[in-house]
Image 1: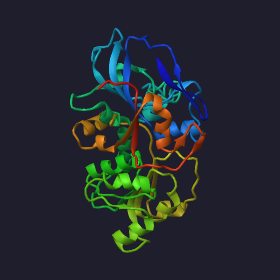
Image 2: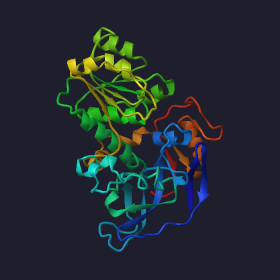
Image 3: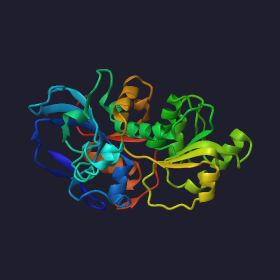
Image 4: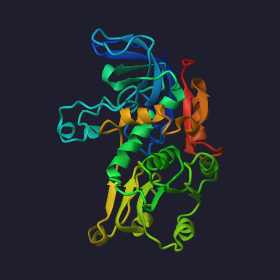
Length: 353
């Protein structure tokens, strides 16, 4: 079978590998339909997120059809359409036992697309417990957003939202920004969005939730919405990793800043203000507290319009163009400005529906 292998920084190629087989009783082999391009994949390829083990197959936002099941598998049959939760947890280590299985101490060797072979491949070896059967009306493409949405719900949970009449913002109109503004909308919070890239702006304008406005500058947003560019806000999700200091200075008492960007960047924060204003600076990653199952339910029920957020789909052999579309030029070993409106980019591995 074919798999997209990470060999080293900027060295990513489709290679021929051995087909997969069930080994453990609860193993399930899934023929892959589509897999989403994630910022994590880009960070691995460019070297800005140096976590992947060379030789690992990339990809973790995926759906497919079951091809083989282990002898103890009872909840699924060959031919079932499924979405795959790639976040492993052992359930026994200290982090799992203290409520943080997304930081399981056994992650090394188990993290799909990082230290365990991922889903930019014709097949993926999963566990029965990591699968959800797709409802007939849910497409492979829509369901592939379950994993990034589950990460979004983890972050929204951490915000502990108790009021809906708050001033809220999302920085960045990429896939995670769009998922966050829709997830906040589902909680009754009408956030505004800030995005400078004209291609992101063009896509976001047509796909924001009702009554959510888009601005190209934070000062402009505050001035137009609240009459003063020095106005304070209660909550901001920063998906860019570039605005920590700016947002921190604009937090109202009790305000919360959620950072979900995997960026190698430092910020200077006033410790006195954190205590004196009861401010919260929060980080979030991966699925937690049943967020994967909740994410699928929201996609299934149309609460999150996952299909609208898929902007391009490329065939497996066109993976270079898929990554270029999100600014990762593998052929030239460089990052490039976006050249077309886009949000979530998928790679179609097969014609499975």
